[in-house]
Each structure stands twice: as C-alpha cells, then as structure tokens.
Length: 371
Image (cartoon, rainbow, N blue to C red):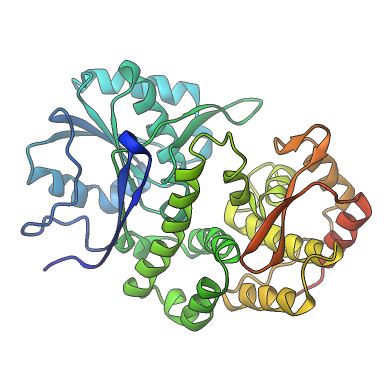
C-alpha cells in the first residue's frame, strides 16, 4: 500500500534548508517510499515518550529496519515536568551508551515536549548532531516541530534554556492523530485557527467548508490543513529564522493573553492551544475596541471558533487586572510598552503598542460572555 495525500514543502534557509513532508501512511516501510533524510552516520537514537512508544514505536522502528540505519530507542516519562536539566543529562548519557558519535542522529518522536527536549539534546551533544523531527500531535505538526526552536525549563520558568537548531527534515504523518485524545486535538486546533487568521480568507474559507471532515479526522483534509499551516510557518522562518527582525512576532497572535492564562493556571489547568484560542477571542474583541477590526469580521472569527467547538469564554473567576499584570511581565514587552498582534482584517495582522489598559479590560470582560 502506497502513501497517499503527500504534500512536500521546503523551509528555505540556504545551506540549512530542509523538507517538511506531510501525509498519511508515511511511517510505513513501503516499496520505494522511505521518507527519511540522509544522515552522515548510521547510528541513531529515537527519543520518545512512554505513551507514544506504546502506541507507535514499533512502526517507526520497522521503517528504520528497512534501511542502513541502526536506531536505539530512548523512552522517557510523559509530562512537561520532564523537560528538565535532569532528563537532558540522562539523555546525554543514554546517547553515549548507545554509541552515538559526531556523525550520529536523533529522531524526536512525539509531541512538543519531546521535540523541544530531543531537539536541544541534538543541538548540544558533541556540539550538534543530525536531528529528525517526527511529530505525533496536531500542535507539534502544525507549529512546534518546524522552525528549530528547542529547550528545557528551569524551576523558575519555562523555556529559559534553549537554542535555534534546524532539523534535517520534518515528517508529519496524520495517521498518528487517530490515537490523539480529543482534548489534545482541540489544543492543536487553537494553533490552526491562529494560522488561518494570519493567512486570510482562503484558509478561513477552507476551514468553514471542511470543518466536519476535520472533526471526523479525514486524513486527506487533515493533510491539506497541515500543509497550509506548515507553509505559513515555513515562510515566516525563512524570513526571520532567529527572531531578530520582528517578522516572527506575528506568529504570537493570540499568545499574549494565552500565555497569561497558562501562567494564571500554573500551566496545569488549561491546554496551550485552548489558551491560544481564548487569546484569539480576546484579540478579536480588542481589535474592535481599538477601531481596527469591523464587527462583521469579529462575528466571522467568533463563528469560526464555534464551528470547531471552541466557543470559549474565560472563566468568571479570572480577573482582568491579574492577567494585565502578568502580560506586563511578558517577554514581548519592549521599552515598557506591551506589543500585541491585532487584526485590521482577517489576514491582516499587525504589531500594535498603542493600547490602553481600559481597552484591554473592556475586551477582556467581553471574553467572559459565552459566544
């Protein structure tokens, strides 16, 4: 059986360019269709989580078994708390014990935590070895596996140690989404909706026309959706790989309030993508408050969120003043001014610094109303 619905694109970074391959049935040993990059050496490790290993590790090992490469699995416990210095140094030791030399490679096989942790291990082990990203969650496939960001947490905060280190390839097989819990799927949809509002009418119309097939996990439609998201992310990465030009800041649409909500919930009571979706609602209301977005566009955005069962409202107990205080400490604050991505129209995001606290509080109160 051959792979179907395959999309390919390139993240264009000169000598560091790499392919993103999207489709159904990619992680299978098919005749003439092994979608692996060329690695310098033959020895590698697969870094994965207990859950993903139990569901899918055999398939990936079988794919490598049909090649010249020899891989050793390294399985770590599930959870954000394991994105730590202790886990990282344990990985280094296991990579050394597996015989990895400077021509070895790491395959990151899992969601965002695995991608961040394994990516940082690959970037720093023996000053950097080859990396392959095989994301298994919707959130990782549409966002975190592309672009080279990686890192670990410190006890005082998330992602405080890390690097930019591009993979040799990203392979996103939508078949993995069949075993993804529904709450994780909807978390990923928060990022998909962000990309749609950045991209414009064509992507939004695609989601409006195909929402039932997306919710039913139709592999052809999912692959098309991933391709749209990945193409947008690849374009931003190509223009601003290291976040030095401000171009990638547009990808923070919905994230200023989203990150504040995550912090208010101590990163345990709310999924990242759900927080982003709430942030998109806030952004839409705030864009109307500041006069940049029409009410018609607002209603279309709210309707889109409702189609994907993300007609979310911020819990009444969450106080706007508390979130404003958290946002004031956000890493996107520059020269004492909070930078937020707002919308002039769907598909026309822009960075704005001229926002008053009263406008933000008014928008936040509207977020408490059911959509």
